[in-house]
Image (tube, rainbow, N blue to C red; front, top):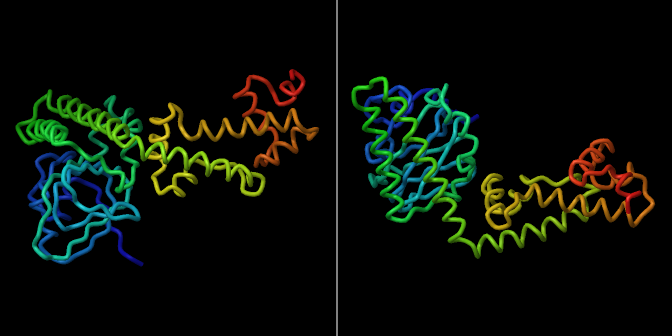
Length: 300
């Protein structure tokens, strides 16, 4: 079985990458050019208890996130969260990428408002091929905020330091969210094609819903080659609604047609729509329509 390293602390990250000693126990910035592992042919797979934001400017080494490979390209950001599996590869040719990696341990966020907000930054669940590609102006802005954070945790800490680190970190995350919004807009033709494909896949899938059960967002994301969060955000930007809402609407439409166009019992309709328990279907239908299936049938 392949060995998996578990990196628990910021200190462990510095040891793994062969970098200098960390200035702060819960947050660090690593200059990619200083990473010693790139000096020799090696391959390391690991998972950490930290969040990472990595800016890649170029080079020939690769970092893998999940099942795919991310090539270092100019002005791109890649995000990972605690527990995610990552892999570093180097062929030892001496050519190093440039950029930086901002790492912060989840314990840094404890007791802060930012801890509760982290789930809203959905890009930490995106795949590597869904990286944020920055303009030069955007890259300078993100780097300048990173520099402020680094200056704060590397100098003499005082009672204001943690508050300033967290507030600037939240600012950086909010700008990343804005720039992803811009990226969805600039890739509008691709996103429109994606929604068209999703619509077709959904209709095809609903034709066999009785055999395969209720479709999930993750199912469509995988078929289309996206992470679940990226796919969900992509459809949201295009239609104003998440793919789960589109799935639910389609099921409700099918249910209404069956309630009005057939004499099937509510239980039979529920089974035909992939529900194992008719009561769950009735509860779902009433939540969406405001009437129970029987009430809806009578009202029409």
